[in-house]
Length: 249
Image 1 (cartoon, rainbow, N blue to C red):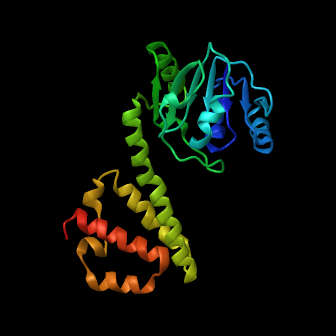
Image 2: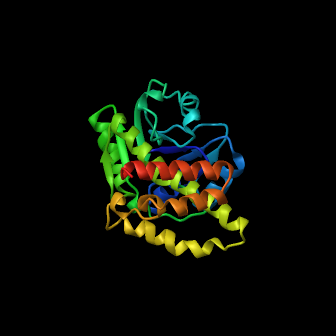
Image 3: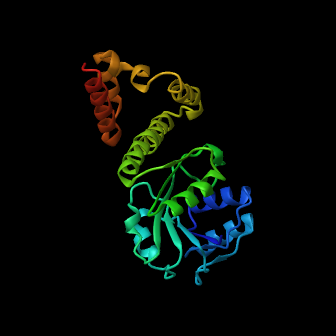
């Protein structure tokens, strides 16, 4: 089966790398960023192009959500399968006359960070059973955690991921701003962060909650508010209100 990955960003890179590590051949990586494509091509020994889209049986679109529809129009072949990797878009966003599908990896991707691809959950949706099975078998070659998922379910999977990953990382960034402002090494907080994450492997997150908000420690809450300003203050108030509401304090 001839496979082409479209894109040059984090998802495209890691998906191409996962395929290559498992001996799955790629016919091409296609995109518009020649510099990034060149780096991927050199590292993974995969042909690339910014101009000519290779003929293939399966095209996997790994671009930003806002670009998926436009990029899908570049594929004019009818007798092929096309999948996007978005968690928040239906397969119908793909506009060609080909067979449409979704190939969604539930993970945060950065090119500089190594990943254990076998642990990444993949959620598959296709228009027919044959394509569904083909994509499941393909994903199963790189991951031990592959499932079917409708768009309705996938929307909530992606929403949960935003809370569990993107929002949490933003709080890390805000926390580092505070520590940096006081010349406190952020490394001091890494054991705390690690323990917080490890704890939810054994304890339900709601039961694991600690801190001044869940204790309704008004003195500490007011002290912290005096130390903050602008966006960080608003985040602090919003988070504490949410915690107190969850525990009806």
